[in-house]
Image (cartoon, rainbow over all chains, first blue to last red; front, side, top):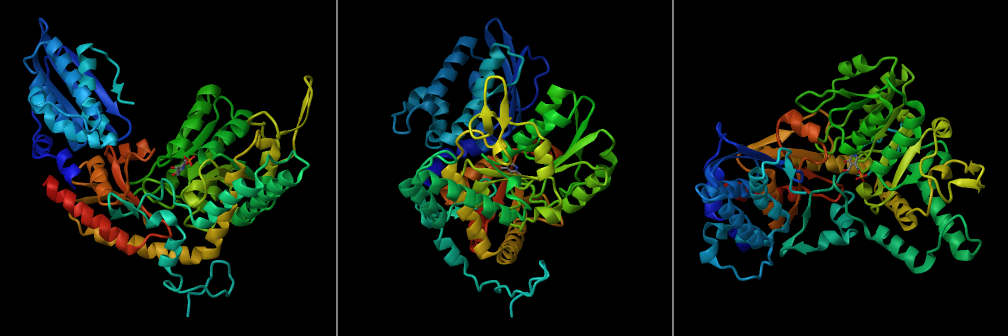
Length: 150
Length: 423
Ligand SMILES: Cc1ncc(COP(=O)(O)O)c(C=O)c1O
């Protein structure tokens, strides 16, 4: 059960139940839809980007606790950051969840992302955790077609 | 006194439930003895694939250890032995389905392969622009996509029998869909995501009143129900070996000889021909015409053993036992107030699909996995069914003859834990 507790930490359960920045963003100028065909999770990310700054970000959709919490945490991290900083956060997140479960994690550097370290023990759930981030990157590039994690 | 077997009109006495011991059956399945994450394995994903008894495993081992050679070609001992075993499996399948002739039994690579074979060899010959194919709302993607591809190529049209909110097909609507352009009806016998047992005989009869052939997707039916293709009257029946305790990569297409005879060839290659010159090729007789290339010989032989294994246990016992376990499962699950069942048909086989308020199926799957309980979560290759019930996915527990009531106790225990964590 320990690995399960690592995965479903209180913070993740809280974000799942009460996600931050959940809803549509009427004045968004970037958006994208992500889809995970394995579990049917869908997420839409809306962005308001001005002068290279993510002024506002929201998301909608349905998904498992991991994907909802990940989307929620992501929005809190990205809001107010520059596009470049957002991309760096994505990279940090991506490196975290795709590295070996044994790898040391730098908790300080990862900050709020650290709660997703437990995902590494669950290969089938990595896509759930990454869906929001991939959708964010697609939205920043303003791809119009729904992206898929497959 | 056992229950009288009235199905066949015979007086054979069949064992009372419990007379045949589930634990003894379980012992035939080595994998069911193993643990996962230190917990005894509770395998409730039989609709995806069933486990294999030792008898099947040993048949395959014996084949590769002592009998392996290509079939239908060598004149030497091993090739003849392999051919004989392969063809013996065909006879087992013929008897199993009660087909009239061995010519009607085509070995495929599975249900999907069988449906694609029919879509090509029958579809491309007989289905033209403006024609219609009827399927149902609860089909597996493998009984949707091959027809969509065919429709795209030919300009034919797909029509869909709707279902109600219990997951039962609307037969009146079905009859309304039939018209002079209908060229084929392709429906699932037992739904893999809802468990619904469709009134397949009635569907076949209605179609036949208009001389429309019917394909039955029997993938989920064969491990639960005795199949008699003559009694059903279907024109095509397809199933996969791996869903009836046999190997993966092997399946069966039954097709009525008169139809098979008129169909286009499917794959071209060795074994499906009598003679080949660059000017002209003469195709082989039935059923070999539809078995191009070296088949999954070990798989076919293993499938024969699997079917014999099931016949030895008997569908009377399987039916009675599974009904009891399924009933029990529905009862204990329905005591969890956060549960909503997806698929509540009057007539249901060993599949229980459900959603839990406030917990996504994917989280349920991960939690249960660590409890040793294997269930399936997702859309089960039936996205239109998910759309009908307006859910992205469900959790699905599906049983086979080796499952016991206590497997559902383990499932319920796991669910209570998850619900507590998520509340
Ligand atoms: C009803 C039904 N049809 C078709 C299939 C496809 O079977 P296979 O993947 O063995 O070809 C399945 C398997 O999930 C099924 O349940």
